[in-house]
Length: 105
Image 1 (cartoon, helix red, strand yellow):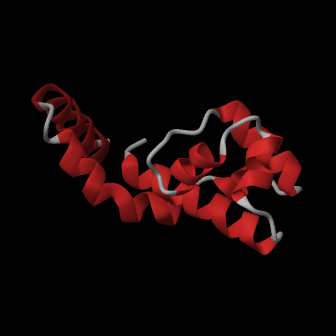
Image 2: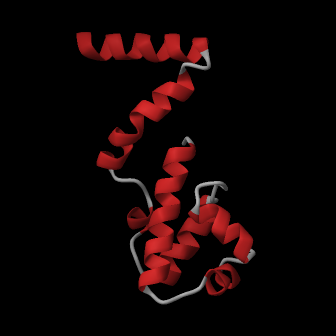
């Protein structure tokens, strides 16, 4: 996942946290992080571990999927992902080949 996708996840966490009237400190205590770490996660600057996403979903009493990017959000972020991939010519060649194969099939 690129930075944009981590930002989407962070925004979802922030929204649910705010809707529930919780501070970053409250949330940090529940998943054994610092409030600075929660801030970084919410800003998309720090990756969140899957185990912590499960803890959050349970704590927030929401489905895990509500913390993850939707298909529409993934599609919207594709230009930024494509931009990152172009930095790696081998990966770009592989993706181009896969896209061609998918169109033909």
